[in-house]
Length: 230
Image 1 (tube, rainbow, N blue to C red):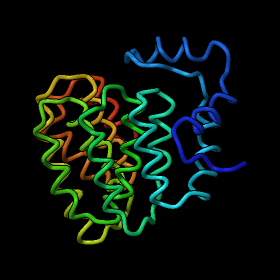
Image 2: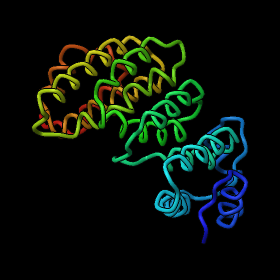
Image 3: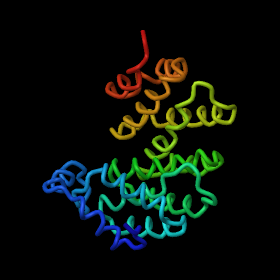
């Protein structure tokens, strides 16, 4: 099958995988006001994997931009998947496009898929954390949340490099600043970051919770300490 180069042909390929009744359930679940096609994630994974392999990076950027602008749930997820790749060189245009999407986040599934793509670009160049730090002061809750979700990769190492360790400390500073924010999605993001960190740096997680745990919502405190032994 020829890889699509326009949003119209990409949507036609996605339509072949629609599951009856799925769109209604997705709309009720995600609640954001947009079109839902009813295409399951495994199908999107397969389609976008093939498209990544067949299209040039410039074609992928153009297609991802058009799919995102369609404001269709599955199209936006496919757009993010098209750009989720560790090695993209040069990647400045990808990074610019991904940044432009962040202020438009309004639901967790689309935001999380886009943050996965963002995280690859941050891993490629940690100096981009300077830009992400600006997100932490945004009035837009989803932008603030993205600063933590897109940096989850920093929790994954038992032996981070000095640069990674400094970045980890930096993001923990952001999380500290988020503690008073009682928004559920922000509290969940703090808990997610700490929970993942606890698998590789349990003491750092214990120290954070000892200092700030009582100020977190109970569900977030419990989630953050899920993998810590007593």
